Length: 74
Ligand SMILES: [Zn+2]
Ligand SMILES: [Zn+2]
Image 1 (cartoon, rainbow, N blue to C red):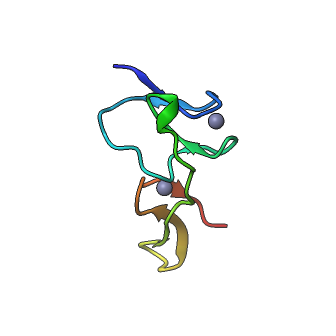
Image 2: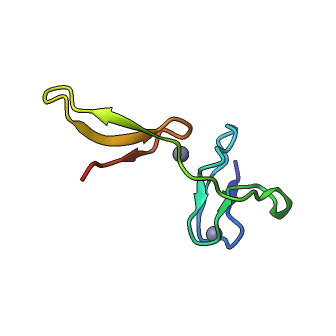
């Protein structure tokens, strides 16, 4: 196992063998995680899909369809 890092090195994660989504990476240097410095790609925005509260039916945050990151509603 080894780490994948963003270009500036502030963000890192284990290399799980899974492909890195284009929206996962470092918000500071705006690059994706990569095992070598030649592989960094520009960070893309998350593809947010609204989620709805099961009880109220109200919109309640969103989930990225690519990396499944959650965002809270306001
Ligand atoms: Zn970075
Ligand atoms: Zn995402």
